[in-house]
Amino acid sequence: MAQGPPPGPGGAEVFAYRAGDLVLRGVAWPAGGPSRFDRALRAGWEDRLSRGLFRYRLGALQTRVLPGRVGFVAQLNPQRGSERRRPQDIRSVRQGFDPRQFSFREIRPEEVLFRLAGAGAGGVLVVINVSPLEFGHVLLVPEPALALPQVLTPEALGAGLEAVLLSAHPGFRVGFNSLGAFASVNHLHLHGFYLDWELLVETAPCKPLLPGRHFHLLQEGPAPAFLFYSQGRRTAELARSVCRLTDHLVRREVAHNLFVTRGAAPEGPLRSRARPGIRVLLWARRPCFGVKEEAAFNVALCELAGHLPVKTARDFEALTEASAIRAIQEHLLPPLQFAQLQQELVALLQEEPAPQ
Image (cartoon, rainbow, N blue to C red; front, side, top):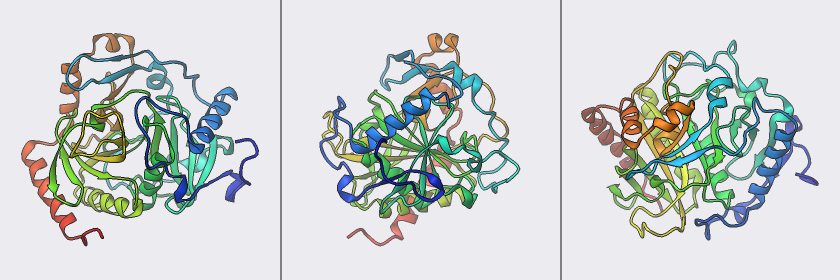
C-alpha cells in the first residue's frame, strides 16, 4: 500500500472506504480486474510473504475437482496440516475468553495489513493468517484488546459482508467457525481468502422458508444450509438477522459454520456465471469438542462449502465425492433435530419487522 492512508490507532494503516467503493454489480466468472481493496490486500499479503512472516511459503497448490454432482475442489496443503499452531482445547460453544491461551493480542504489528474504516467495519483489523490455506488468506479481527470470545457479532459479520463486497473477485470468500465447529482460537475472528474456483453453493437452487424475507434452505450442496441472499445493500440489517440466529444456536449449544460468497439469486437464473448478490450460508452441526483429531480434512466452513484442503498426498489421491460426503455427514445434526431447529429459526425471523 505504497502512498497509502496514514496510520490509524495502534499504528496500523487505514483502508478507508465509502458506500461507493462496494462493488455491487458486474462481478462474474471468470474474474475480472481487481478492486482497490483487492490490490491493497494482495500487495500487503505478498509483501509479508516476501518478508518471511508466514509459517511456510505457500506456492501453487495441487488442485483437482472430484467427479460428481457436488464438484468438490480438493487442494493438497500438507504444510497447513503439520505446521499450523496447535488448536485450543474447546469444551463448549459458549466457552469464555481465556487470557492464558493464545489470542490475537499477540499478533506482531507487521502481520497487520490494514484496519478497515467504513460504515459497517469500524475498527476491524485485516491480519495475515500465518498458516494460510490459500492465497490471500487473512483474518478479520475486531479490536483485539476487547478480548471477545469466538461468538459472532453483528459488527464482526458486517465487516465480513462488506469485505466481500469491496472485492471485485467472485472467489473472495469470508467465513466463520464457531467453537465446537473447528474454530482453532477462542478469540473473535473471521477468515477471508481467494479461491479461483466456482462452488456449487454459489448457484444451487434453494427452497424458500420465508417468502419475501430472502431466507431459504439450500439442500443441493455438501450439507443442508440455511441461506440468506442480499443484493449487497443494508449489510448491517443482514448481519443483525444472521446473528439473531447464531445467538440462538449459541444458547442451544449448537455448533455452526458460516460462509459468505458472491452468488446467484436463489430464484434464478442459476446457470448464469454472473454473481449479482451475496449468499450467506449457515450450517448447524454436531459439536466436536476437545483437541481436533487427525483426519484427511477437518469439517469446517471451507469443507461444508465444497472446498477441501487435504493434509496428505495419500488422502488427496484417494479422496472421492462419496468418501468426502460420508466424512461431512458424520458432523451433521440428526434429521429430526435439524427440522426442529429450522422451525425455531423461522419463528425467530418472523418476529423481526419486515424489511422496508
